[in-house]
Length: 511
Image (cartoon, rainbow, N blue to C red; front, side, top):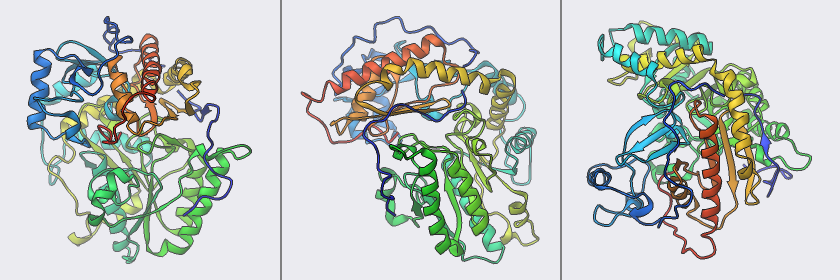
Protein backbone atom coordinates (compact mmCIF):
# COMPACT_ATOMS: atom_id res chain seq x y z
CA UNK A 1 0.00 0.00 0.00
CA UNK A 2 1.10 3.55 -0.59
CA UNK A 3 1.07 6.49 1.75
CA UNK A 4 -1.64 9.06 1.51
CA UNK A 5 -0.57 12.32 -0.07
CA UNK A 6 0.59 14.87 2.47
CA UNK A 7 2.10 12.34 4.87
CA UNK A 8 5.65 12.36 3.55
CA UNK A 9 8.68 12.20 5.85
CA UNK A 10 10.03 15.66 6.76
CA UNK A 11 13.66 16.52 6.35
CA UNK A 12 14.17 18.22 9.70
CA UNK A 13 11.86 18.58 12.65
CA UNK A 14 12.29 19.79 16.22
CA UNK A 15 12.67 17.08 18.87
CA UNK A 16 9.59 14.87 19.19
CA UNK A 17 8.77 13.89 22.78
CA UNK A 18 6.02 11.28 22.89
CA UNK A 19 6.66 10.31 26.50
CA UNK A 20 4.58 11.05 29.51
CA UNK A 21 6.72 8.87 31.71
CA UNK A 22 10.23 8.20 32.92
CA UNK A 23 15.42 8.15 37.46
CA UNK A 24 16.62 5.54 39.43
CA UNK A 25 18.38 4.61 42.56
CA UNK A 26 21.42 2.47 42.02
CA UNK A 27 21.44 -0.98 43.47
CA UNK A 28 24.13 -2.18 43.27
CA UNK A 29 26.46 0.79 42.83
CA UNK A 30 28.18 0.39 39.45
CA UNK A 31 31.93 0.70 38.90
CA UNK A 32 33.32 4.19 38.57
CA UNK A 33 33.75 5.82 35.20
CA UNK A 34 36.78 4.53 33.31
CA UNK A 35 39.88 6.48 34.30
CA UNK A 36 41.60 6.28 30.93
CA UNK A 37 41.06 9.01 28.36
CA UNK A 38 38.61 7.56 25.87
CA UNK A 39 37.39 10.75 24.21
CA UNK A 40 40.61 11.63 22.40
CA UNK A 41 41.39 8.19 21.00
CA UNK A 42 41.04 8.09 17.21
CA UNK A 43 41.70 4.46 16.27
CA UNK A 44 42.20 2.81 12.93
CA UNK A 45 38.62 1.57 12.65
CA UNK A 46 39.37 -1.15 10.14
CA UNK A 47 42.00 -2.92 12.23
CA UNK A 48 42.31 -4.71 15.52
CA UNK A 49 43.69 -1.53 17.04
CA UNK A 50 40.10 -0.28 17.34
CA UNK A 51 40.37 -1.94 20.75
CA UNK A 52 43.93 -2.41 22.06
CA UNK A 53 44.44 -6.06 22.83
CA UNK A 54 46.73 -7.59 25.42
CA UNK A 55 47.58 -11.26 25.04
CA UNK A 56 44.54 -12.44 27.00
CA UNK A 57 42.11 -10.34 24.97
CA UNK A 58 43.72 -11.54 21.76
CA UNK A 59 43.57 -15.15 22.88
CA UNK A 60 39.83 -15.08 23.53
CA UNK A 61 39.18 -13.13 20.34
CA UNK A 62 41.14 -15.57 18.22
CA UNK A 63 39.59 -18.64 19.82
CA UNK A 64 36.13 -17.17 19.22
CA UNK A 65 36.86 -16.51 15.55
CA UNK A 66 37.93 -20.12 15.13
CA UNK A 67 35.05 -21.71 17.04
CA UNK A 68 31.99 -19.43 17.29
CA UNK A 69 29.51 -18.35 14.62
CA UNK A 70 28.29 -15.03 16.01
CA UNK A 71 24.61 -14.02 15.60
CA UNK A 72 23.36 -11.82 12.79
CA UNK A 73 26.94 -11.11 11.77
CA UNK A 74 28.90 -11.18 8.54
CA UNK A 75 31.85 -13.03 10.05
CA UNK A 76 34.26 -11.81 7.37
CA UNK A 77 33.98 -8.32 8.83
CA UNK A 78 35.84 -9.53 11.89
CA UNK A 79 38.68 -10.89 9.77
CA UNK A 80 40.70 -13.87 10.97
CA UNK A 81 42.92 -14.59 13.92
CA UNK A 82 45.91 -13.90 11.70
CA UNK A 83 44.44 -10.80 10.03
CA UNK A 84 41.84 -9.25 12.39
CA UNK A 85 39.74 -6.31 11.22
CA UNK A 86 36.83 -5.23 13.39
CA UNK A 87 37.95 -6.80 16.66
CA UNK A 88 35.66 -8.83 18.86
CA UNK A 89 35.63 -7.62 22.46
CA UNK A 90 35.98 -10.45 24.99
CA UNK A 91 33.83 -9.50 27.99
CA UNK A 92 34.76 -11.29 31.22
CA UNK A 93 32.69 -9.51 33.88
CA UNK A 94 29.94 -6.94 34.33
CA UNK A 95 28.51 -4.73 37.04
CA UNK A 96 25.71 -2.17 36.86
CA UNK A 97 25.85 -0.42 33.47
CA UNK A 98 29.45 -1.50 32.82
CA UNK A 99 30.96 -4.38 30.87
CA UNK A 100 34.66 -5.18 31.30
CA UNK A 101 37.01 -6.88 28.87
CA UNK A 102 39.87 -9.25 29.60
CA UNK A 103 42.37 -6.42 29.99
CA UNK A 104 40.20 -4.48 32.42
CA UNK A 105 38.83 -1.83 30.06
CA UNK A 106 35.23 -0.86 30.83
CA UNK A 107 32.41 -0.09 28.39
CA UNK A 108 29.10 1.51 29.27
CA UNK A 109 26.30 -0.71 28.01
CA UNK A 110 24.21 1.91 26.23
CA UNK A 111 21.84 -0.62 24.65
CA UNK A 112 21.34 -2.97 27.60
CA UNK A 113 22.99 -5.86 25.73
CA UNK A 114 20.35 -6.04 22.99
CA UNK A 115 17.67 -4.49 25.20
CA UNK A 116 17.52 -7.20 27.86
CA UNK A 117 19.12 -5.66 30.96
CA UNK A 118 16.90 -3.57 33.21
CA UNK A 119 18.42 -3.18 36.69
CA UNK A 120 22.11 -3.42 35.80
CA UNK A 121 24.37 -6.39 35.33
CA UNK A 122 25.08 -8.77 38.21
CA UNK A 123 22.29 -7.42 40.40
CA UNK A 124 22.59 -8.95 43.91
CA UNK A 125 18.87 -9.69 44.33
CA UNK A 126 18.60 -11.59 41.05
CA UNK A 127 21.93 -13.32 41.65
CA UNK A 128 20.89 -14.48 45.13
CA UNK A 129 17.59 -15.81 43.79
CA UNK A 130 19.46 -17.92 41.24
CA UNK A 131 21.86 -19.26 43.88
CA UNK A 132 18.93 -20.17 46.12
CA UNK A 133 17.11 -21.90 43.26
CA UNK A 134 20.22 -23.92 42.35
CA UNK A 135 20.16 -25.32 45.87
CA UNK A 136 16.57 -26.47 45.32
CA UNK A 137 15.82 -27.43 41.72
CA UNK A 138 17.73 -26.80 38.51
CA UNK A 139 15.27 -28.21 35.98
CA UNK A 140 12.34 -30.55 35.51
CA UNK A 141 10.28 -31.03 32.37
CA UNK A 142 6.97 -29.18 32.46
CA UNK A 143 4.97 -31.96 30.76
CA UNK A 144 3.37 -33.94 33.56
CA UNK A 145 5.16 -31.91 36.24
CA UNK A 146 5.10 -28.41 37.65
CA UNK A 147 7.17 -26.43 40.17
CA UNK A 148 6.75 -23.39 42.44
CA UNK A 149 8.68 -20.82 40.36
CA UNK A 150 6.64 -21.40 37.19
CA UNK A 151 3.36 -21.32 39.13
CA UNK A 152 4.25 -18.14 41.00
CA UNK A 153 5.55 -16.42 37.87
CA UNK A 154 2.43 -17.32 35.91
CA UNK A 155 0.23 -15.93 38.67
CA UNK A 156 2.16 -12.68 38.84
CA UNK A 157 2.25 -12.18 35.08
CA UNK A 158 -1.49 -12.80 34.93
CA UNK A 159 -2.06 -10.15 37.59
CA UNK A 160 0.09 -7.67 35.66
CA UNK A 161 -1.37 -8.28 32.20
CA UNK A 162 -4.99 -9.20 32.87
CA UNK A 163 -4.40 -12.34 30.78
CA UNK A 164 -3.79 -15.89 31.95
CA UNK A 165 -2.42 -19.40 31.48
CA UNK A 166 1.15 -18.43 30.60
CA UNK A 167 2.88 -20.61 28.02
CA UNK A 168 6.68 -20.49 28.12
CA UNK A 169 9.43 -20.49 25.51
CA UNK A 170 13.09 -19.60 25.44
CA UNK A 171 13.26 -16.33 23.49
CA UNK A 172 11.28 -13.69 21.68
CA UNK A 173 11.02 -15.52 18.37
CA UNK A 174 9.68 -18.56 20.23
CA UNK A 175 7.00 -16.37 21.81
CA UNK A 176 5.98 -15.11 18.37
CA UNK A 177 5.75 -18.66 17.04
CA UNK A 178 3.67 -19.73 20.04
CA UNK A 179 1.20 -16.85 19.71
CA UNK A 180 0.72 -17.30 15.96
CA UNK A 181 0.24 -21.05 16.28
CA UNK A 182 -2.23 -20.56 19.13
CA UNK A 183 -4.23 -18.08 17.09
CA UNK A 184 -4.49 -20.24 13.99
CA UNK A 185 -5.21 -23.36 16.05
CA UNK A 186 -7.92 -21.51 17.97
CA UNK A 187 -9.75 -20.69 14.76
CA UNK A 188 -9.37 -24.30 13.60
CA UNK A 189 -10.85 -25.55 16.85
CA UNK A 190 -13.66 -23.04 16.41
CA UNK A 191 -14.52 -24.56 13.02
CA UNK A 192 -13.06 -21.67 11.03
CA UNK A 193 -9.84 -23.15 9.69
CA UNK A 194 -9.84 -20.68 6.81
CA UNK A 195 -8.73 -17.97 9.27
CA UNK A 196 -5.07 -18.93 9.12
CA UNK A 197 -3.24 -15.91 7.68
CA UNK A 198 -1.39 -13.17 9.53
CA UNK A 199 -0.92 -9.45 9.20
CA UNK A 200 1.84 -7.13 10.43
CA UNK A 201 3.05 -3.56 10.09
CA UNK A 202 5.52 -2.28 7.55
CA UNK A 203 8.91 -2.31 9.25
CA UNK A 204 7.72 -4.69 11.96
CA UNK A 205 10.14 -7.12 13.57
CA UNK A 206 9.10 -10.22 15.54
CA UNK A 207 12.05 -12.60 15.41
CA UNK A 208 14.11 -14.66 13.02
CA UNK A 209 12.73 -18.17 13.11
CA UNK A 210 10.73 -19.18 10.04
CA UNK A 211 7.32 -18.42 11.51
CA UNK A 212 8.46 -15.16 13.08
CA UNK A 213 10.16 -14.03 9.86
CA UNK A 214 6.87 -14.51 8.03
CA UNK A 215 5.47 -11.52 9.95
CA UNK A 216 8.74 -9.55 10.04
CA UNK A 217 9.17 -6.77 7.48
CA UNK A 218 12.91 -6.09 7.73
CA UNK A 219 14.57 -6.97 4.40
CA UNK A 220 17.91 -7.78 6.05
CA UNK A 221 16.27 -10.56 8.05
CA UNK A 222 13.65 -11.66 5.56
CA UNK A 223 14.88 -11.59 1.96
CA UNK A 224 17.42 -14.40 2.11
CA UNK A 225 14.87 -16.85 3.48
CA UNK A 226 11.80 -15.79 1.49
CA UNK A 227 11.45 -19.19 -0.27
CA UNK A 228 11.01 -20.83 3.15
CA UNK A 229 8.35 -18.44 4.39
CA UNK A 230 4.59 -18.25 4.27
CA UNK A 231 4.75 -14.50 4.15
CA UNK A 232 2.15 -12.47 5.97
CA UNK A 233 0.66 -9.26 4.61
CA UNK A 234 1.71 -5.81 5.83
CA UNK A 235 -0.15 -2.55 6.29
CA UNK A 236 1.35 0.94 6.67
CA UNK A 237 3.08 1.90 9.91
CA UNK A 238 1.71 4.84 11.93
CA UNK A 239 5.26 6.25 12.09
CA UNK A 240 5.01 9.62 13.87
CA UNK A 241 7.92 10.99 11.80
CA UNK A 242 5.43 11.38 8.98
CA UNK A 243 3.78 14.20 10.88
CA UNK A 244 4.69 17.46 9.17
CA UNK A 245 3.30 20.96 9.19
CA UNK A 246 -0.34 20.77 10.21
CA UNK A 247 -0.25 16.96 10.22
CA UNK A 248 -0.05 15.61 13.78
CA UNK A 249 1.08 12.16 15.02
CA UNK A 250 -2.55 11.44 15.90
CA UNK A 251 -3.58 12.20 12.32
CA UNK A 252 -0.90 9.85 11.01
CA UNK A 253 -2.26 7.19 13.37
CA UNK A 254 -5.81 7.74 12.12
CA UNK A 255 -4.73 7.46 8.49
CA UNK A 256 -2.82 4.22 9.15
CA UNK A 257 -5.84 2.83 11.00
CA UNK A 258 -8.08 3.69 8.05
CA UNK A 259 -5.78 1.73 5.75
CA UNK A 260 -5.89 -1.19 8.15
CA UNK A 261 -9.68 -1.00 8.19
CA UNK A 262 -9.81 -1.16 4.40
CA UNK A 263 -7.54 -4.20 4.38
CA UNK A 264 -9.51 -6.05 7.07
CA UNK A 265 -12.81 -5.24 5.39
CA UNK A 266 -11.65 -7.32 2.43
CA UNK A 267 -9.47 -9.97 4.06
CA UNK A 268 -10.82 -10.63 7.56
CA UNK A 269 -12.49 -13.95 6.64
CA UNK A 270 -9.05 -15.53 6.15
CA UNK A 271 -7.11 -13.50 8.75
CA UNK A 272 -6.30 -15.08 12.10
CA UNK A 273 -4.39 -12.24 13.76
CA UNK A 274 -2.48 -9.01 13.43
CA UNK A 275 0.80 -8.77 15.32
CA UNK A 276 2.51 -5.49 16.15
CA UNK A 277 4.95 -3.84 18.54
CA UNK A 278 3.00 -1.33 20.64
CA UNK A 279 4.25 2.27 20.63
CA UNK A 280 7.77 1.57 19.27
CA UNK A 281 8.88 -0.50 16.28
CA UNK A 282 12.39 -1.09 17.57
CA UNK A 283 14.36 -2.92 14.88
CA UNK A 284 13.15 -0.64 12.09
CA UNK A 285 14.86 2.33 13.74
CA UNK A 286 12.95 3.03 16.97
CA UNK A 287 9.84 4.10 15.05
CA UNK A 288 7.47 5.68 17.57
CA UNK A 289 3.78 6.33 17.11
CA UNK A 290 0.69 7.76 18.79
CA UNK A 291 -1.28 5.46 21.17
CA UNK A 292 -4.47 6.32 19.29
CA UNK A 293 -3.41 3.77 16.68
CA UNK A 294 -3.56 0.96 19.23
CA UNK A 295 -7.07 2.01 20.25
CA UNK A 296 -8.22 1.93 16.64
CA UNK A 297 -6.57 -1.46 16.02
CA UNK A 298 -8.25 -2.93 19.10
CA UNK A 299 -11.64 -1.75 17.90
CA UNK A 300 -11.06 -3.10 14.39
CA UNK A 301 -9.87 -6.49 15.64
CA UNK A 302 -12.99 -6.85 17.76
CA UNK A 303 -15.25 -5.77 14.91
CA UNK A 304 -13.66 -8.05 12.29
CA UNK A 305 -13.01 -11.01 14.62
CA UNK A 306 -9.23 -10.93 14.27
CA UNK A 307 -6.87 -11.61 17.17
CA UNK A 308 -4.66 -8.76 18.39
CA UNK A 309 -1.18 -10.07 19.24
CA UNK A 310 1.01 -7.54 21.00
CA UNK A 311 4.76 -8.09 20.81
CA UNK A 312 6.02 -6.52 24.05
CA UNK A 313 9.28 -8.45 23.86
CA UNK A 314 11.45 -5.34 23.58
CA UNK A 315 9.09 -2.62 24.82
CA UNK A 316 7.67 -4.35 27.89
CA UNK A 317 8.79 -4.09 31.51
CA UNK A 318 9.05 -0.32 31.67
CA UNK A 319 10.99 0.53 28.52
CA UNK A 320 8.36 2.96 27.27
CA UNK A 321 7.56 4.31 30.73
CA UNK A 322 4.61 2.09 31.66
CA UNK A 323 4.98 -1.54 32.70
CA UNK A 324 3.71 -2.56 29.28
CA UNK A 325 3.60 -0.22 26.31
CA UNK A 326 0.00 -0.96 25.35
CA UNK A 327 -1.21 0.34 28.72
CA UNK A 328 -0.62 3.86 27.39
CA UNK A 329 -3.54 3.25 25.03
CA UNK A 330 -5.80 1.72 27.70
CA UNK A 331 -6.44 -1.45 25.67
CA UNK A 332 -6.30 -5.20 26.23
CA UNK A 333 -4.81 -7.62 23.68
CA UNK A 334 -5.83 -11.19 22.91
CA UNK A 335 -2.21 -12.33 23.20
CA UNK A 336 0.87 -10.73 24.72
CA UNK A 337 4.43 -11.87 23.96
CA UNK A 338 7.08 -11.23 26.63
CA UNK A 339 10.84 -11.85 26.78
CA UNK A 340 14.12 -9.84 26.95
CA UNK A 341 13.67 -7.86 30.19
CA UNK A 342 11.52 -10.63 31.70
CA UNK A 343 14.53 -12.05 33.58
CA UNK A 344 16.34 -8.75 33.97
CA UNK A 345 18.87 -9.76 31.31
CA UNK A 346 20.17 -12.90 33.06
CA UNK A 347 18.67 -16.02 31.45
CA UNK A 348 16.68 -16.77 28.28
CA UNK A 349 12.93 -16.96 28.87
CA UNK A 350 9.78 -15.92 27.05
CA UNK A 351 6.11 -16.15 27.82
CA UNK A 352 2.81 -15.84 25.96
CA UNK A 353 -0.38 -15.06 27.85
CA UNK A 354 -3.88 -15.06 26.37
CA UNK A 355 -7.55 -14.81 27.28
CA UNK A 356 -9.58 -17.42 29.10
CA UNK A 357 -11.79 -17.78 26.04
CA UNK A 358 -8.87 -18.73 23.81
CA UNK A 359 -7.55 -21.15 26.45
CA UNK A 360 -10.93 -22.84 26.77
CA UNK A 361 -11.10 -23.52 23.02
CA UNK A 362 -8.21 -25.98 23.50
CA UNK A 363 -9.69 -27.65 26.59
CA UNK A 364 -11.02 -30.98 25.30
CA UNK A 365 -10.76 -34.76 25.54
CA UNK A 366 -9.26 -34.82 22.03
CA UNK A 367 -5.46 -34.50 22.16
CA UNK A 368 -5.43 -33.02 18.65
CA UNK A 369 -7.42 -30.05 19.96
CA UNK A 370 -4.75 -29.31 22.57
CA UNK A 371 -1.96 -26.85 21.89
CA UNK A 372 0.77 -28.90 20.22
CA UNK A 373 3.95 -27.05 21.09
CA UNK A 374 6.83 -27.69 23.46
CA UNK A 375 10.55 -27.50 24.00
CA UNK A 376 12.80 -29.25 26.50
CA UNK A 377 13.44 -26.29 28.79
CA UNK A 378 9.89 -24.90 28.86
CA UNK A 379 9.37 -23.02 32.14
CA UNK A 380 12.88 -23.68 33.42
CA UNK A 381 12.92 -23.10 37.23
CA UNK A 382 16.13 -21.04 37.20
CA UNK A 383 14.84 -18.68 34.52
CA UNK A 384 11.50 -18.37 36.30
CA UNK A 385 13.24 -17.48 39.59
CA UNK A 386 15.23 -14.79 37.77
CA UNK A 387 11.96 -13.41 36.40
CA UNK A 388 10.35 -13.45 39.84
CA UNK A 389 13.36 -11.57 41.28
CA UNK A 390 13.06 -9.02 38.48
CA UNK A 391 9.38 -8.46 39.27
CA UNK A 392 10.37 -8.06 42.94
CA UNK A 393 12.62 -5.17 41.96
CA UNK A 394 9.78 -3.43 40.14
CA UNK A 395 7.68 -3.66 43.29
CA UNK A 396 10.44 -2.73 45.74
CA UNK A 397 12.26 0.09 43.96
CA UNK A 398 9.43 2.17 42.46
CA UNK A 399 11.41 2.10 39.26
CA UNK A 400 8.66 3.24 36.91
CA UNK A 401 8.19 6.45 38.85
CA UNK A 402 11.95 7.01 39.17
CA UNK A 403 12.46 6.47 35.45
CA UNK A 404 10.33 9.53 34.73
CA UNK A 405 13.10 11.69 36.16
CA UNK A 406 15.88 9.53 34.69
CA UNK A 407 14.41 9.95 31.23
CA UNK A 408 14.13 13.72 31.59
CA UNK A 409 17.70 13.97 32.89
CA UNK A 410 19.09 11.86 30.05
CA UNK A 411 17.13 13.85 27.47
CA UNK A 412 18.71 17.04 28.79
CA UNK A 413 22.15 15.42 28.66
CA UNK A 414 21.49 14.31 25.07
CA UNK A 415 20.57 17.88 24.03
CA UNK A 416 23.81 18.50 22.06
CA UNK A 417 23.10 15.39 20.01
CA UNK A 418 19.43 16.31 19.53
CA UNK A 419 20.45 19.80 18.34
CA UNK A 420 23.16 18.58 15.97
CA UNK A 421 22.42 19.89 12.46
CA UNK A 422 22.73 16.38 11.02
CA UNK A 423 20.49 14.73 13.62
CA UNK A 424 16.80 14.70 12.68
CA UNK A 425 13.61 13.44 14.33
CA UNK A 426 15.08 13.49 17.84
CA UNK A 427 12.61 11.46 19.88
CA UNK A 428 12.16 9.61 23.13
CA UNK A 429 9.60 7.44 24.83
CA UNK A 430 10.30 6.40 28.39
CA UNK A 431 13.86 5.06 28.45
CA UNK A 432 14.23 4.80 24.67
CA UNK A 433 16.05 7.61 22.81
CA UNK A 434 16.67 7.92 19.07
CA UNK A 435 17.98 10.24 16.34
CA UNK A 436 18.04 9.85 12.55
CA UNK A 437 21.40 10.91 11.11
CA UNK A 438 21.82 12.54 7.72
CA UNK A 439 24.96 11.01 6.26
CA UNK A 440 26.42 9.83 2.96
CA UNK A 441 28.25 6.94 4.59
CA UNK A 442 26.61 3.66 3.56
CA UNK A 443 28.41 1.92 6.42
CA UNK A 444 27.56 4.61 8.96
CA UNK A 445 26.35 2.13 11.58
CA UNK A 446 29.61 0.17 11.59
CA UNK A 447 31.75 3.30 11.72
CA UNK A 448 29.68 4.94 14.44
CA UNK A 449 29.67 1.79 16.61
CA UNK A 450 33.47 1.64 16.39
CA UNK A 451 33.85 5.32 17.29
CA UNK A 452 31.49 4.92 20.26
CA UNK A 453 33.37 1.84 21.43
CA UNK A 454 36.65 3.73 21.25
CA UNK A 455 35.10 6.25 23.65
CA UNK A 456 34.04 3.61 26.14
CA UNK A 457 30.37 3.15 25.25
CA UNK A 458 28.40 0.49 23.41
CA UNK A 459 26.01 2.07 20.90
CA UNK A 460 25.07 0.20 17.73
CA UNK A 461 22.98 2.23 15.26
CA UNK A 462 20.21 0.65 13.21
CA UNK A 463 21.03 1.85 9.71
CA UNK A 464 21.31 5.64 10.04
CA UNK A 465 19.40 5.73 13.33
CA UNK A 466 21.44 6.23 16.49
CA UNK A 467 19.61 5.09 19.60
CA UNK A 468 20.25 4.55 23.30
CA UNK A 469 18.40 2.17 25.60
CA UNK A 470 20.52 2.01 28.78
CA UNK A 471 19.76 0.04 31.96
CA UNK A 472 17.45 1.88 34.33
CA UNK A 473 20.18 2.21 36.99
CA UNK A 474 22.29 4.62 34.95
CA UNK A 475 23.51 7.45 37.22
CA UNK A 476 23.81 11.15 36.46
CA UNK A 477 27.57 10.93 35.85
CA UNK A 478 27.16 7.80 33.73
CA UNK A 479 24.44 9.49 31.71
CA UNK A 480 26.74 12.44 31.09
CA UNK A 481 29.50 10.05 30.02
CA UNK A 482 27.12 8.28 27.63
CA UNK A 483 25.75 11.48 26.11
CA UNK A 484 29.17 13.08 25.61
CA UNK A 485 30.53 9.92 23.99
CA UNK A 486 27.48 9.61 21.74
CA UNK A 487 27.95 13.17 20.49
CA UNK A 488 31.73 12.81 20.07
CA UNK A 489 31.26 9.56 18.14
CA UNK A 490 28.87 11.29 15.77
CA UNK A 491 31.27 14.15 15.12
CA UNK A 492 34.14 11.73 14.51
CA UNK A 493 32.07 9.53 12.18
CA UNK A 494 30.74 12.40 10.09
CA UNK A 495 34.27 13.75 9.76
CA UNK A 496 35.09 10.64 7.73
CA UNK A 497 32.65 11.50 4.96
CA UNK A 498 34.98 13.79 3.02
CA UNK A 499 38.12 11.67 3.04
CA UNK A 500 37.28 8.09 4.00
CA UNK A 501 36.91 5.37 1.42
CA UNK A 502 33.46 4.09 2.27
CA UNK A 503 32.75 0.41 2.53
CA UNK A 504 29.56 -1.20 1.28
CA UNK A 505 30.18 -4.51 2.97
CA UNK A 506 27.52 -3.82 5.58
CA UNK A 507 27.21 -3.61 9.31
CA UNK A 508 28.40 -5.95 11.99
CA UNK A 509 24.83 -6.87 12.78
CA UNK A 510 21.33 -5.69 12.05
CA UNK A 511 20.62 -3.94 15.33
